[in-house]
Amino acid sequence: MGVLSLNKVYLENTLDLEALDLRYSDIPEAPETVREDCCPGAPYISFHPTLALTLVNPCPQSGLFAHHIPVRDQDTVAQILARLARVEKKIKDVSKVTLWSYEDPVLGPRKVPSHENPTQGKVPLSPSTVISVDTERSEFKVSVNGASQPLGNTVAYIVTEENS
Image (tube, helix red, strand yellow):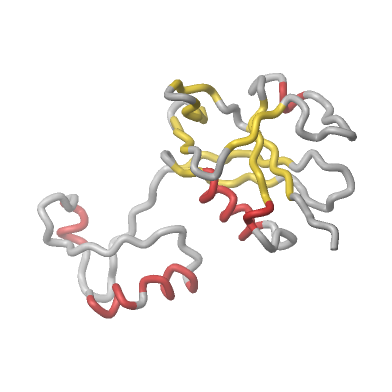
């Protein structure tokens, strides 16, 4: 276990994993299948349920397209932006990307975005914002001031570029 713990970051990067949890198979909270099927050289892999969130770029002539990013329950906006940066190679600095939710999560994505003001009708999401996922209902919710509000299946992302 010590060797795996020392090389955890390397394993996550080379296997392109979001997270890697290393646990002993004989712990009491381990499921029965893990205790029976897990052996040296044959790890037991378990996956968390996800739901695809559509991220669109409303800025004209940016060369950035829409992406479907898998989101797990209790993911933060920063984690979603890191996944977006892995998929969209034109994003070099994640700190220059902001996620915007629609004020109206049902009608907002259906409106034609404004050319002059792409953030019109949208609310910025801070990187620490936590998104709740209900995979049974296929719903995303975001907590704002302690109240849970629907997020919708589509959000916008805008990359701010500094002119040198």
